[in-house]
Structures are given as structure tokens and as C-alpha cells.
Image 1 (cartoon, helix red, strand yellow):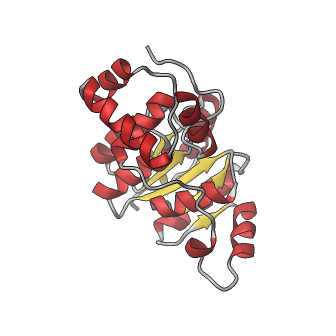
Image 2 (tube, rainbow, N blue to C red):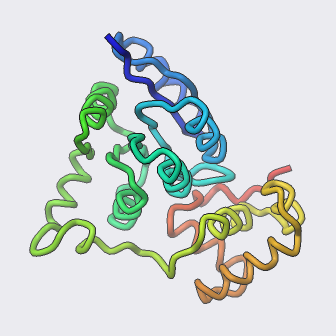
Length: 225
């Protein structure tokens, strides 16, 4: 019997190690990789082609939403389940729009994580009970996607999202350019586009936006050396 291959991306070590140990106890799962940032999750997904990815929402270098978009662009059949401490409507809505087929809260039991993995592999969707209740309330006359508020400003490109996150994490243009493998002038160009689209014209404002949008966590503004 073919095992369900799983990739885990979560920057909280205790969470990641706990899930890894739990999955190792299940005979029908095989963990093929794990990582603590979204950029590495994209690389591993393209290399390992797991059946399911358990993806944290707020991670350094590249957040879970943008990592999900990039992975599914190259691997549309891959199943991604978001794991987050946040269950606000905008977070769930953005996860669904990014292509995730499940949304679990971090207080979810190990049993439910396993259930979610097995269910999405079958082509179904899975949401934690609290998330499902909120979605049901919003499902009146319209679909979830139409009814749920996105909480988003005008759409940013993948590169603009990467630049926004790195700026919000405290990186100067030079360091951002180095991390992304592009020139400082290109970073400045993307930064300008982000500010124009969001109508935000200072770093503090971009950081506040990134936190409110779930791109980074409130304690994540640390310069990466």
C-alpha cells in the first residue's frame, strides 16, 4: 500500500518536532521533508513532490500564503493544508484564495491533523471546527469566496510580496537584494510599486500592514544576517 507522503513547513521548532513525531507513528504516512521557512518549502515541494504539505501561515523569508501560491503554480495537484494560530475571516479567506484545501488551528489535536491529511488526499477539503462554523455563518446567499472579506489591498505580484515581507522583517534594501538574488535597484523598484499599490509610504506602515495581513507575526521584525 502506497504511503501518503507529507512535507511539513513550520518555523516553530516545538510545533514542527511534535507533528513530525506524531506522523511517524502513523503507518500510512511518510514524512519526506521539513523546513522552517516558506522559501525552502517551495524548493522542497518542487524537488520531493509530496502528496500533502502542512504549511504554517507566518514564516520567515516567505510566508505560507505566498509559498502556497508559488507551489501550486508549478504543482497544481498538490494538496496544501494551512496550520495557523490565527482563525480570523481574512486569514481563512486568503488561504482558500491561495489554493489551500484545508485550514487547521495550532491547538488542533494530532488525531485531527491525521484526519485532515487523509481527507484532502481523497480530493476533499478539511477545516477545523471553529473555522467551519465561521464559514457556515458567512455562507448565506453567496459562496464562501464571494462572501468572506479578503482584508486585502490591491494584488501584489509574488516578487512584490517577497520584497514586502523582507522589508517588514527589518531587512535593508541591500540585504533584501542579496536574499532574493536581485539588484538593489530592482528591490527599490519593487518597493516603490508596493508602496504605490498599498498607498503606504514608510517602512513602519508596511510592517503594520504585513502584520495585519498575516504575512509576518508581530514579533518577527528581526534583521536577518
